[in-house]
Image (cartoon, rainbow over all chains, first blue to last red; front, top):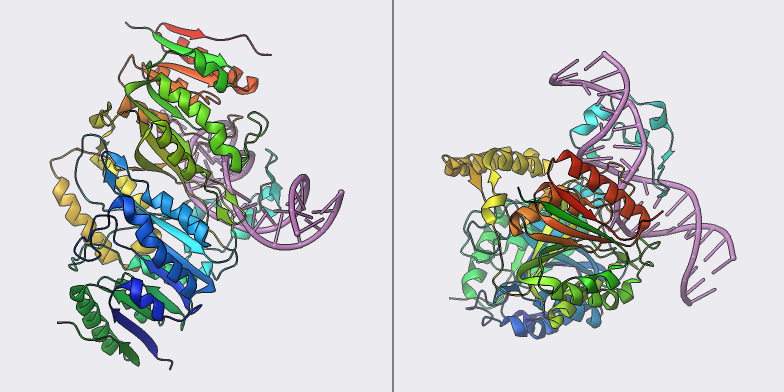
Length: 287
Length: 287
DNA sequence: GTTCCGCATGAATCGATAG
DNA sequence: ACTATCGATTCATGCGGAA
């Protein structure tokens, strides 16, 4: 049985990333501190300085990612002076200058978003899941995240008409045609780029409420067993805990001792439960 | 009874907007041709030229909008060379330079999105609904779009991903039940900034499938009866038809004679049905 | 009149082939 | 090498006709 390595690093990712090997990571997935939040850890980055702050980090991430790997960045801009701040879209432009490809923007629809009422806006129920790559070709295992077909399929596919059995080109000349017969016996369809996931309600004393479903979905989609996953803003270790459970090696970096200890504790405990050889590396203990 | 004015203008909005009075419009809502589409009308704007093409138009829109009015821009970037193109986010930055405030970005989740399978991306199930304002203070009537509890619960349940229901029924079930308890006695809730609406597939001879629900939602939220609504890219007149039905005056501009005639026909017919005085202005007839 | 069921339709994208 | 065209793939919805 292959052992799973979960490496936890305590420190500032701006420093610690430099020690990682180039082209060694299959998937980077992280939810960095949004501007002006978690002010106790990374010093409360001013929205206007956010791009400048993040670029050195994304440069290191570009270096450590394998050519066919993927970087998933979960982020959302804050409201500043009644406007959505532009640091996220500016970051996208700057990262492209850096060499990243902006492959896709998926939506995390938060089904149970934070309650509240404001006079001129509604509750914010979504966050960006920005997908960046080093190359147009990258690893993706779509069949691992297929979902059950909608209810319509039962009735629709019960008995097929003649046109269903052949390829029926669209009348509108869009070049689109359908062959319904291909769908018979299929019970699953590919998902879309809108993910419906509730936020985690169990309070982990971590400001970012990253549900386990989220890293799990991307780890399934973008890695195989034995691959390497990195979260440079580990927090309480959700990504690494999921990766360990799924047989992926992972690295997590966290600056705050409080979170680092929490993550280390959880992941060690899970390693024991999993009955499989798990090595937990760690840097100097934190008190 | 107050008459509703629906003014339809045939021509290029880059020209026709100049004739409109400054500070006269309460709500602008439009879905401009996306880059490289509708090539037969606006000449198929190249993605790289999109910002440059749109800025003169948004400048006019800024002029005609009332200080407390709102501009809702429905748009989505294409994939070019395997990447999401950046013209939309560049447009946001450029419009802010022009004097617009980028108040919010809402998501239109298209429940029945275009089918297809590609090796490195999933089906695109969402579009941007960008909200721009001239001032931090603007008109908004939130209570008009409150969702009945039943509806809300129905929609929420429907939008739970199937995997969630299957994977962890107990958790999902209990979470939902708990929430429901909080809503007892309340009959309406505020919506979020994620709108779940299906595209219209009925044959309208118009490529853009703008569901009536979409303008209706924003017209309710951002205008009152007698207010003025503008759609500079009218298409087959969905926005104006809805505005007329809701007792709002409106202006629609369309460059293509085919769509213009379609819109004019529909809106006249509806005016008769509504039993209320409706004036339909039009420019030179199109054959 | 209701419900049921068949079916065309859509702001799509990729890769291969042709000019 | 670079652009233009073409074929392949795919799923939820609302309409309209049938039961």
